[in-house]
Image (cartoon, rainbow, N blue to C red):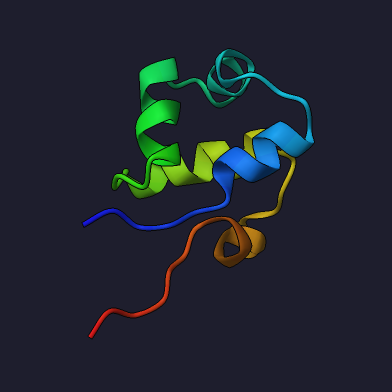
Length: 70
């Protein structure tokens, strides 16, 4: 099940391409694409993307929907 996140919206608001975000986060463009589509990723990958977008790790809830599923 895909999870929602704000990565694409934030990236586009910063006028940043997927390639630029991928380079800043040291991940592949395919990884950025999958995450923007709501696929799961490792915690380390989330951390890299959060920092690459200029956010603090404490802001992760505003980027990744981490609501408990139940």
